[in-house]
Image (cartoon, rainbow, N blue to C red):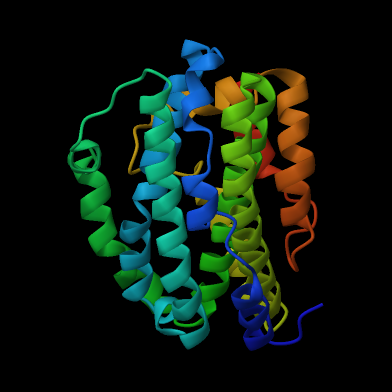
Length: 270
């Protein structure tokens, strides 16, 4: 159990990259088309690619708040942003190797589709959060933990459902890095939440009332719903999400008994 935020950062910096140059260079890209990929998973991969690529947008949001000014969090996010963008690039390459061509300007085109209301709200966001000062950092970290856990479990569900061995190999490597991101967010959130009853109440209130699936906002709600309905469809999918995401959230101080995350997924997936 980590005792300080510096301890968490030190652990994270010791974690080796899964997506090393050697891994990427030796990856069996030539085998991708030897295995069928159901068309239903193409929109899921595109959504995941875009959300990973929008990391710089989320980072810029945090940099305008006390959270982003924390030396520990800033150092984490400097590496996190590089890793997340590489995930996007590798997912984009997989799409092309699978016979799903993408534009050479795919990132520019994806960014151009971000709704105006998200861009507008993004400007107001720091003004609101800064009113709470450092108390809101716990909200950022708990929210980030939920999103990283959701991303990680989304990848797991995708490789289980797609049954594409080359995609599974890629997603397992990406997930190794996502798992380290999750552990960082979750432990920083735990340490911050332990310090103040007000912080715990604030974080629980904000997440229970305002959390939306990862990527929704920069991506349209209908696309987020499609991903959730595809990956977590039915009682088994919702139970998988509850066990691997919501249950872990409930272990944070102040979140015991909070089921709103699973309930939002269930409204889409059932």
